[in-house]
Image 1 (cartoon, rainbow, N blue to C red):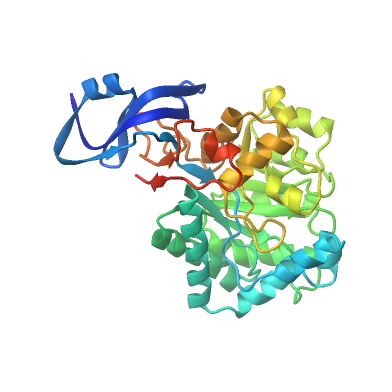
Image 2: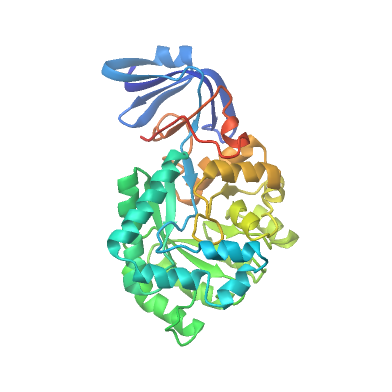
Length: 399
């Protein structure tokens, strides 16, 4: 028998992507944990037979509760200064995202406010957001830069993200999104791309695991994005793309060409892009909160799944287009607006997100050897975390 220092016992049900990549639901379950990792999981009788509790072990009586893996939010922008609440009101009155951005709002407004914020202000605000995300079930989150757009400010954002994650108890992975917008001081988008390659990426390479680009009309094109992403790859960073949010400009093809980890958004992706993604190893990340907020079509995750493609879900938490910290809400939208089942939504917000971040060997599933990140759901049916709009977990544990 293997020793365990924590036991979650008497679970009504447990749902997870299993070791074989399928989806399993176990009733009358238990989870045995040792040194922050899962030692045994499954039916109570089997877990009790497989482990022996160490002296002083913690036993959590989960009678009446269910369990799912800690949620993995693979696309967020939670380090920023100020707020853009007024833009929400403008959109409610008919203004669209691109018009607001053209008039100096959107990303440009957040760049100005982030640059003006002190280090302490940025850290305190980001810590509050990540702490709230943990309360809502997120135990691992990706955090992007992109509101600094100078070597100093982009690096400052990434350092803040890591410090905020440590303070909030959320495992954070960071992404350099230097090509989020062209800053006001740049002579041109093309000139700024060269600055990002020559100055920002080298300053951020040791502070990030991945690099991202906003390939979109009026932002950056395929050639600019390719140069930046190739430079990021040369520095050892994984590649991501904001793609097809408003228009199809070749982002999906570029992602496949470069072997990117994911393309995110996809509101404007047509049948050809769906087929290309489904035939590739690139993960399609749906951001339904942004689509809902901006009154855009929902990402075609249903179609990509039906063709055998790989998908993930994320909040896109940011001060403008997706002011939401809740992956349970995101999963609810995936089910009600995109046609995913509860099992597909949970898999996309756990194992799928972990795969985007290169952490699927460590988090995102309740299987032996993984981190003991466990969300306890208030009720015997784990699906209530998704079905009840605005649901909050009963308890969140992190290994």
